[in-house]
Picture 1 (spheres, rainbow, N blue to C red):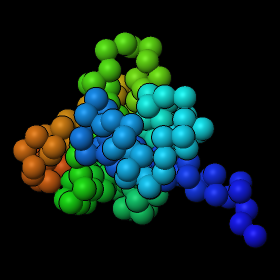
Picture 2: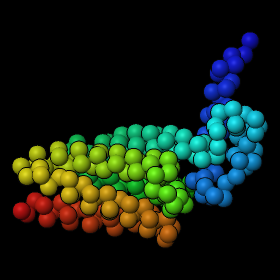
Picture 3: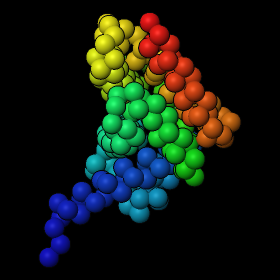
Amino acid sequence: MANPERHEDSVRERLLDAAEALVYAGGIHATGVDAIVRQSSTTRKSFYTHFESKDALVTAALQRRHERWMNRFIEDTRRRGKTPRAQLIGMFDVLRKWFASPDFHGCAFLNASGEIESFDDPVRVVAREHKAQLLKFVRRLFDEHLRCAGHDARTAAGLARQWLVLIDGAISVALVSGNAGAARDARKVAEQLLDLLTQH
């Protein structure tokens, strides 16, 4: 006998999958409820059973994407080397692999924020949380790097913010240009920044 709770979980996951894929590829405003229902092979009734609105579904889909993307990015970055410096630099190799994938459409959180006017909208809140968590990870690597190199750790916060600008800049250039080499250019700048740091 089928488990109704498991079936409902499956319906919810299909709706989230469909919303994430459609919004990432085409944008929030261009994606209607009917398209999400069709892609998920569900019904409008099922949609409104699980989500009060399209905005609520999009917010939930972005939250889920944030968790998955961050976990994978941290894991892949940590694999790029044994030292904090190697991981900081290797981060851009992780990005380049992502940029070269056929389903790359830029940063889902920057894209979504660009469509939403209100600063307090739940979509913008999720996007800010995503960038805050990414910054926190970069800051942690800089804390480790500066400690290992015997440098003043008080500069870690500023360096982490600059690193985030490099990351988001590379993502934006790769999206607009269609060139995964943007990650390589950002990597060179990153290496120069760390080299300058060791000279002081």
